[in-house]
Length: 295
Image 1 (cartoon, helix red, strand yellow):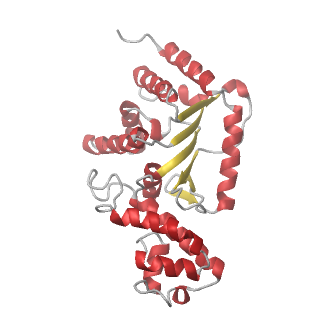
Image 2 (cartoon, rainbow, N blue to C red; image 1 turned 30 degrees about the vertical axis):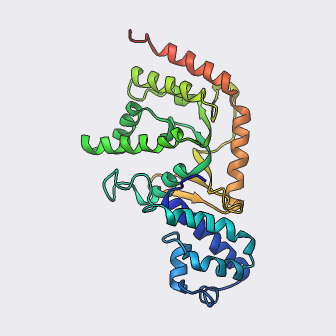
Image 3 (cartoon, one colour; image 1 turned 45 degrees about the horizontal axis):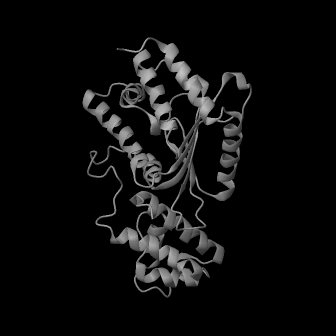
């Protein structure tokens, strides 16, 4: 079982319980009439992803919702989460309290909890795959006026998000980047070349599929950047989520009918992009053209 982060576990459990309750046509009070510890207000907090349900009541809730077959799955997830010493997200105790934007917590916790990520990026190298130098330049661009100490924290956040790639059972990562990303001079030649070389290195890992959508490919699906996450596999009906970054906030889509178009578009983009080995060749050629490598 993937050791999922606090925000992702609570969100997944809450979403699934709310979906089941709504399918049954019950209000909060009716749903908790037989529970021992969970009252209607407490269940509301669970459904909002703020708390985990009491393990003692999960059997009653799922039986009430006519989903008793899900009891072992929910008990596994809740029991594992409750049994860990202080269920936390990876940045807690590592970055200052309040530093991580509230609206981004589900994305960052989801990345750490994912078994599969599909990422499409049109302008810059995805946050999830950046070198420290590239991340530093982007932090200055995203947070003008930030002092050096704050910039270091943003870089630490960027690098911390990638640590999931080095766990014993890393997620499958599928990434499509527009070729324009490789030519945007972020930080100058040395920074860009190092970043492209890092993408080549990552692309050799068996769990990472990096593809470039080439200029020569012509028109492609008209969509902006997004990330699709599959997580908490122990909950077989939970579809995961899709994330879109807006100018001032993060947008999460979690209903199956909302997520399906992202899956379809990603498959189209992946098919239109160069194959992984062709993409690595293009990345290497682009890196070589940036300038002479230091000796």
